[in-house]
Image (cartoon, rainbow, N blue to C red; front, top):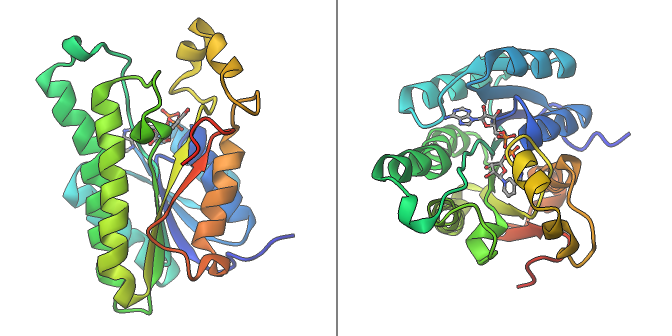
Length: 244
Ligand SMILES: NC(=O)c1ccc[n+]([C@@H]2O[C@H](COP(=O)([O-])OP(=O)(O)OC[C@H]3O[C@@H](n4cnc5c(N)ncnc54)[C@H](O)[C@@H]3O)[C@@H](O)[C@H]2O)c1
């Protein structure tokens, strides 16, 4: 059994379902103490119970909620070693139909949240020897042509900018920041889209979509000490859809 995350205190946002739930399960299996932050109370509690972790109901776009989650992880587990900024939203919408309110909200949830968690978490980590942060971006940031919307792609590009700049600025505190760009991963976020567009799977060079566990395995690696000299990178996990 792989126990490379034994004793680490980690936060996983959006861990109530989909990719976040898979990440929470994988890192817990490898020995981490996990705090799940999500809006979905019932599902979040269920995952937390399954993995022996803690659930905190939080809107990740709100600073007070974010700081409460960080404080909870530090109190419950005596510190904070890592954060997976995974919570995200999208909407399938044509360029000309994007409303101002949607543009603002998707930036709050997908980018502002990651800045808030990075700042709050790094304040603790820099005083305690460092840590690791993994931001979930998307192939949408790298020009995937069927992406759900320009608003979503812009937020995921912002995640890469945040990843690179925070990696550079936090390296001196031994805080590593990396991003993962998932391809098509079957989750509640896109189940309907895939059902409506079965041809999109055929375009994947390896011929199959990702499972949430594929993303979780890379996140676990990036959080572990095996990745101790890796920072500022974006990892495509997408069956070959984007090769850069
Ligand atoms: N599914 C894919 O194919 C795919 C591809 C590329 C990137 N991603 C990214 O992976 C991440 C997870 O996606 P998923 O497919 O598992 O989505 P999902 O919709 O299945 O799960 C997202 C989770 O985030 C939570 N969440 C949303 N807004 C929140 C908020 N304001 N505060 C707290 N929690 C909130 C939801 O409640 C949900 O539990 C997202 O950042 C998404 O953009 C997904």
